[in-house]
Image 1 (cartoon, rainbow, N blue to C red):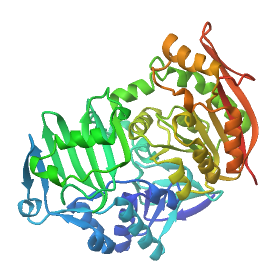
Image 2 (cartoon, rainbow, N blue to C red):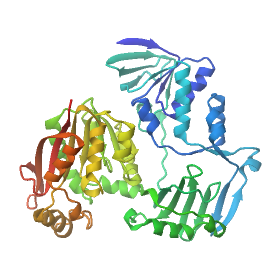
Image 3 (cartoon, one colour):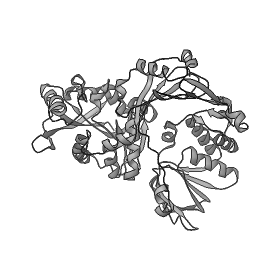
Image 4 (cartoon, rainbow, N blue to C red):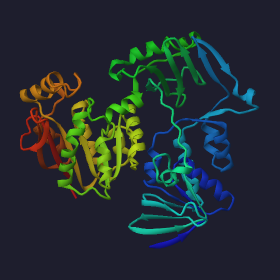
Length: 491
């Protein structure tokens, strides 16, 4: 084991860890940052875009505010609308000069990473098995693995900047740790569009129809939210319906300024209620829990995921993702839906696992992280997307040479219509009605063709069958309804 020493060990290379490292370095205090994922991975995370005065001042103190001050948009106030009448809060005058800045935290992260690299400070990215020791003593230390080597880092202080789900929080003794949570009994319907914002400042709207927020990412990209019932579904909201409802909640004077357009992303975040259903084995998600041991058994028969970088595409609420993490995989889960990702992150509070969840499409993720993963899983997802061939091409791009892709979906034939739709949704009621569309089912021959076109090699296939009498699932050679396929990428 290699022994090293520093004054402050910082766990986590997100904005908080990087900013702390930069502030310490400016005072001549030596520090080392330990991060679980790669620098590119950290930089690819989607983060908020509004910076408050205190944070902006710290960025300036750290000496990395050049781009923030030159490119960021200064907001000297915010607006609060009550029953469509707007009241502007003059933050600058009321606080003696405080403002907020519209400048993405992703950009702040890049600025901090560049400054740290330029000053030669040490950061250990892609570190495994990080553990904090003797944190209640005057001689704490950190152990971790990096690049195949084990490290013992002696330090005077440990700064946990790895978030709620990181190792730092769990190291704090329970009698010295207090956690706070606020759960809201409604959903947030969010829409992102490449349209100019309704106003140059944020507008918080309270009306008899519910809350709304008008925010922005830049002068050409807007972010809007509507409060909706927990029972609502995003598919019930067309873009036109969203814009019409937003017009009924924003101030009358701002309605003419609202520029509408197609959504880039649209989702409903439903927190506590949805979380309880995803992980309730007797809810509408029961089939996913029932088949999960079979899915993991199939994956285990192909590859030992322990220690490997694994990506779960279309991870939903994290049922398969957590099973992979339990086997020791270094797991990332991606999904386009904000709501299921909120569920997945919330459940990590119970499981205590380390999983990186990101809201992203397979196509965009492949552009950011080509050749990064040993194993990619894409289960019960392809039958819900408009272009499954594109997803397979992205999965191929994400794999390392020699990597494995495991896919599951539903065959398209009269038997699958009878079993997967009429039987599962209408007779046995294993799934909510409307879960599946028959025309989106994929024949094994079609899936194999998509894979060949993507450069993947078929290695095997298995069926998953359900016995309604015993209420048991099993693997079989019958691929008429549900089936799994294993593909590999050439060395």
